Image (tube, rainbow over all chains, first blue to last red):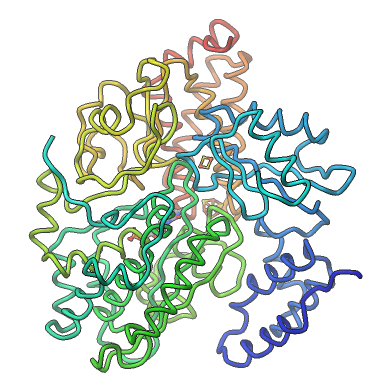
Length: 163
Length: 425
Ligand SMILES: Cc1cc2nc3c(=O)[nH]c(=O)nc-3n(C[C@H](O)[C@H](O)[C@H](O)COP(=O)(O)O)c2cc1C
Ligand code: SF4
Ligand code: FES
């Protein structure tokens, strides 16, 4: 079954919230995030749906959707890997970590593996500077990374478990 | 070393989070009861002002002074916004606080709202902080259930509603006016100031924006009193404690609550376990990615707002990132600058075009392809960007670059003379 943009319950919940708000527009990130969590990314239809829910034009939604780097306007893999390249992670070897991830996955930054399992993206600081080098897969944070640990994490994430 | 008091991390236990029952057992919400029963709003504002608390979000503006500009007596809608964006590299203190003890922020916000007579609050929280967001949602529900939030709090007649807003990631959303646009569901470019948020903020209503750590301090000030709070610091002008997040080339990289004014050297040796691998200290960022570097000659400097300004840097967020003597400072600055260039919102030219230019120059020098003219170009960029950007992002970005030129000129020249990075292996 094709995934829905939003489940009927979610859609109903947003419709209700909109009527209670003086400025429905404040929900735009919530709606986009909800679509992304259900559908994996935000397709054009998601932008149109968000716009119609909140009484905005699709362009008004689009200029917000494209502003944030954690909203995806293109298809991504089942798991998105955000690997931190900011200063604390850099100081503890993030460049090597990024190389290792690219080697293991056989893709460059910004790409998705052929089996659709992973998309690899660089990210700014994850607020895990004390556990550097760090990455986030979905919403799960992994710190103190080294090559061995990454291999175990990838193997577990591929099968849907946690290492 | 003097013994110190823990406020914000008093209840912190590894891997655990304190919720209502335990928070109350440890004395939580007594400050709220005290304020609502014994103090009028002006008395709460006065206490915060007298405490000397300065904003923990990076700029260090005195909190009581900020609150005194707020039109508290004006009737109608007003907003209190907690800034939990925390995307300055090296900064992870707010996360530590929210994952350990979220009710402190909730109580602090109710007190702040009472002090400024604000009926509605928002906690703006970054994308990556899912656990912190869940903790807050639970804490808010518990507080509402217990009559500590919502209508007629503790029978005082004061009402306050609190909401959590999840963001989707961009450093600029930490800038308070960009954050307000983000909260409104608009593109998060900063707004021009004045008017300041206290006059025209969220949905055009008077708004106070404060950092997570700032607000979490309020219950302790009300509970212990302004003088007691001020006296917690090691320095005369400092006040209270600070969450210092350690990172970089240290043996131990953890977040500690310590008195304002602990020296950089003590922080590194006593709490960071010293520079890793037995190496020597070369430099550090004392308060996040936008603060100018310090070097070994600054190890005795107390980490407070005044002392750091005197040596040309800033306390910022208190996130201390240490670099050992194997670090190329040109490469480190390049990494920092790339972060700011990527996170530029693109609104103004000095930032949108200037930061990539700075990255280009630093990269050229780091690769050994620079010449002496590039140093002048770099200085020119710093002059032209500093203070001329629409918001403080680009000016902040110049902090490390300016200090690289000031403190590590020899290293820059060495790159150019040798035609390669002297520290690359
Ligand atoms: C680019 C930029 C990013 C910022 N990021 C944050 C942040 O993540 N958290 C924060 O509290 N303040 C941040 N600030 C500072 C806020 O604009 C504001 O000064 C602060 O939230 C006020 O709270 P305080 O007075 O309690 O420190 C940032 C400022 C700039 C210019
Ligand atoms: S300084 Fe940078 S982030 Fe700030 S308004 Fe200008 S372009 Fe945007
Ligand atoms: S710098 Fe990588 S998590 Fe902060």
